Image (tube, rainbow, N blue to C red; front, top):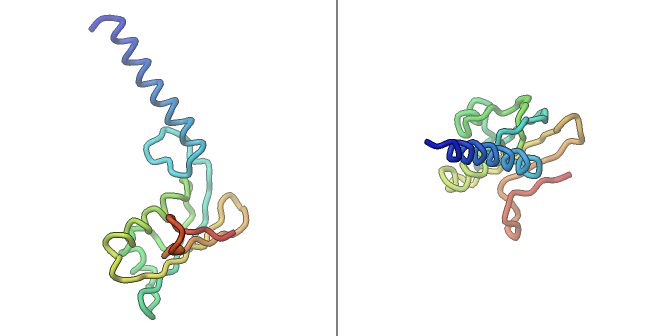
Length: 126
């Protein structure tokens, strides 16, 4: 491999990393970006299927996430995982999900599933 190709390859890899870091600063999802997760989120999840409330163990088995936790990553991965499950595997259950969360000691917010019919994404209450 010639020196020019090596420099182009290295420059290309570094360029994509910089793009990923910059993109992560403006998006809540940071799955494929090399960027720091500088948020601490405390959350609690409540789920009802029909008239029955799920236990913490049932919530963990359903979503493969704990029902409550301190999370040091971007909080957006939690509702994304739940929404994906409810759109696919759990769609016939008509579950109602409520996540109460607080990021970096800020005000408590509530995320709910199912989303409002007219809204294309799940809603967040201030």
